[in-house]
Length: 381
Image (cartoon, rainbow, N blue to C red; front, side):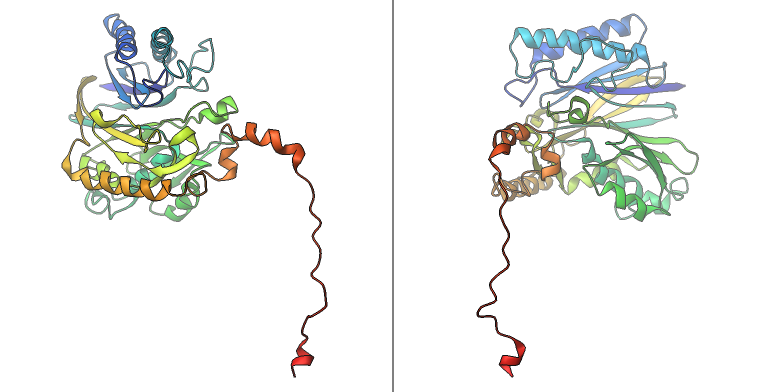
């Protein structure tokens, strides 16, 4: 059976501030999508929350970029926004950058990850959902999942994985993409995706047969809106087992926290912390950034799950280390490298502050130090 798995997310109002979602808003989103399942427009759906964001997980047979499916998500977010505004929630509807749906939510604010594939006899998938960070947060774990044999033993052991994977990398400033095959082009891949402000991994394909393995949301709200309107809080779909990395291999990168962009006001670097569903409510300095992992088994398009995959004491150390990293970075306060570099701050509210000072800058004449007192080599002989 050929099925499409679509995950579309948006921030349509935070409770309280940016820390969580309100149950009434989530209930309204579920109500709208459930009606579409009853109409036969969708096979199945689920709704996930992480911080102040809501993600709609949908299965259907309409393929990627379906106007019908994207329209369902848009309608659900619009109706949820109405509830958020009634409750005066913070940033109500902030990810809906247009008043009109134009056939596809891409470019309108919501983040989208989706893929179409032939459902296998057993089809385990993991949906990762992060808050207080950007799409480039997936660059490092995707590299480790699909190109690092020290993380994924299947790259060495599994014949279907032994030929490696191809990464589709997007330049978020130009909209152009390039496909790089690993292991042959591993160093070329790292040369790009290590620049997390510019390049993000969009899709991953298996070299053995070209089958899609992973798909990430790559929308950057600041580049769409031209100013900071909230961090992008990305989603990621990864297929597991039987020719793809095992569930444990996919989760392994998250056992070692790393630094991502986002956190407070989308303007700071911070550690990403793997948490259970119940702990996906960032509050300390609006963070640190959080990520959840929802595991599903697909059965004829039905979503069996989710399993809360980070609700495991094996990730307790990762959470502790992330908090220690957060302490170190918070010590920097308003200084880099805790605060993002200047080029990234251009898309925050900082330019409004600098605008007030632009006419107060003046040229400072650089004078050459006086010659008097200089000791020449001859004088020393």
